[in-house]
Length: 220
Ligand SMILES: C[S@@+](CC[C@H](N)C(=O)[O-])C[C@H]1O[C@@H](n2cnc3c(N)ncnc32)[C@H](O)[C@@H]1O
Image (tube, rainbow, N blue to C red; front, side, top):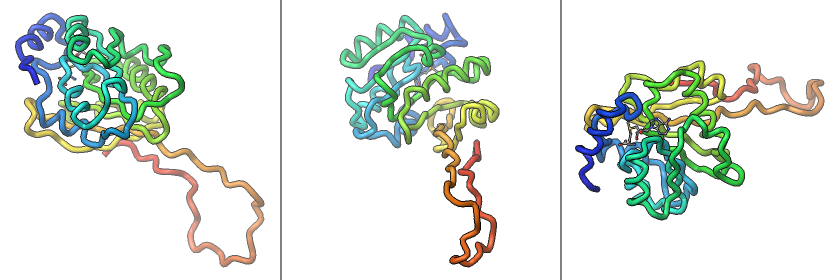
């Protein structure tokens, strides 16, 4: 991987809130955020790829360049990405517009990998980014987000509103600064029980009430 410290630092100087870090992510964090992604994940959507620290790792995991869509708002980064990943789809775009852009036929994405500085954004923007990204994610797909903060960067009310749950994947203590990766998935849907509500007398009574709801826990 090329050494991008200087160009990244200069980008941060010109737009600190958007870039959100003074240096690109290191190998330990790139390893962690892509850990569950394989060649069979299918299309991957990367948000805020910067100079490509996670993108290189995704290719090493077996994701094909043709299966990668990179959404980057910084024009300097976008040019670098187009040069480095000529067969990926690189879009100069605000990730807040994901819900209104028809990026795919249907929703085939197996994983979203996000390096976006969500803690620098308004709640409204976070809702549009995360909700918009999930509109392209297939059932069972996941959204991976890193943070330098101590807890999940997507607030609990946002998870509730979007019907998502978040789980800490792990912490990359060797990254500078140390970071954590969270995995967002859809909450299981409530299943409707159809049929007669009359008790089935051929079966012994259940000892305890049965719960229909799925797991509604949010953050760990
Ligand atoms: C913290 S850097 C992460 C870069 C890279 N993923 C890494 O880990 O080294 C955040 C990236 O998100 C991009 N970004 C910030 N806001 C964005 C938005 N609304 N839409 C798309 N990209 C955005 C920035 O330009 C920057 O490349």
